Amino acid sequence: MRLSTIISFFVLLFAGCGNESDIIKNLTPQNKITSWIEGKYLYNDGDAGVYFEEWSMKDSSEYVGKGFYLTRDYVDTLFQMKMRLLLDSKKTTMFYDVKGQNENKETEFVLTNNTDNKFVFENPFRDFPSIMEYRLLGDTLIEVTERGFVNNKEKIRHFSLTKID
Image 1 (cartoon, rainbow, N blue to C red):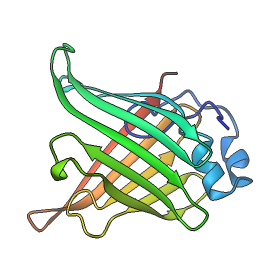
Image 2 (cartoon, rainbow, N blue to C red):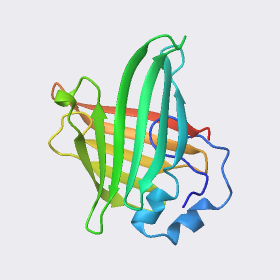
Image 3 (tube, helix red, strand yellow):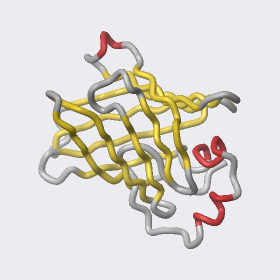
């Protein structure tokens, strides 16, 4: 169920495929997500580095992904994680397992809101991010917004993922 679109954090700026929002409007919330999650994504962070992410279908109710952030010269891995998207009839859940964080346990985010082109996952027990928002901007671009608090101050981070495959 792939519309040749995008997902998570790194490859989200396609050249657009026309009237995708009309297609997405006719899908169930779970089918909306699965229509764009499979694939490879890229986020170029300028001089800081490059983030890559890849998602594939494990079975009809689970997608698995992996992501890693490399230095600009591709020599050092600054960050890596495993991800899962679990589709259940009662809830949709995204899990992140960041190497070296949270005692290497998964962190759970539950889908709390979805519209034609936006999916919001939340975990109110986390400081940052506690809210992950994915906005589909055509077939090859996803805008990601992370929200939460660091040292009792609100922090918001935006980036765009471009689908590369």
